Image 1 (tube, rainbow, N blue to C red):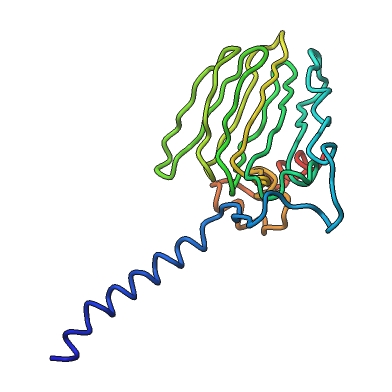
Image 2 (cartoon, rainbow, N blue to C red):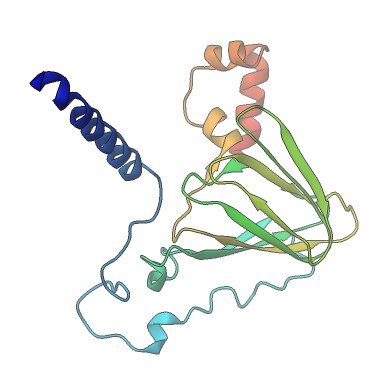
Length: 206
């Protein structure tokens, strides 16, 4: 009788433990217990909270796809604030290859030109859209996504906001083909042959 009466308590404790573990393993920025974090104990002034690294964002004729970042690595005042920015500059017909941000969703705003964007969910369903200047699109956290400037005559500029001070970046082509995974594994996985895999690897190293 005493054993059976303790069962609901044990089940509740087990459930509480599972919830606690699931919360601690989420890839979110940790909460901070102060107003802000500084790199050392010295006092700071307003310049610590100011960042000018995106001032060159407007480049109507970029030569290559370029990303200007404002994460905690470039802007230490973002540490603990769960926000960051990036400016994406696309030459005509340029692509930001499929990639993921493991620690953050991405909210993209097109500032100039048009972009074709899309992401793939865990059921392998593609959600893609052509964005005009002023349009926004959200890429859910951790899902593979891309951006492509289909226009062969005009560049494009977009600004991305992230719900993390350091959302992380995992490039699908580079993580698969430039990290030393055995060529035979890649050939079998992609239903092709080793020479084709090696050709892709060589192209990504240029």
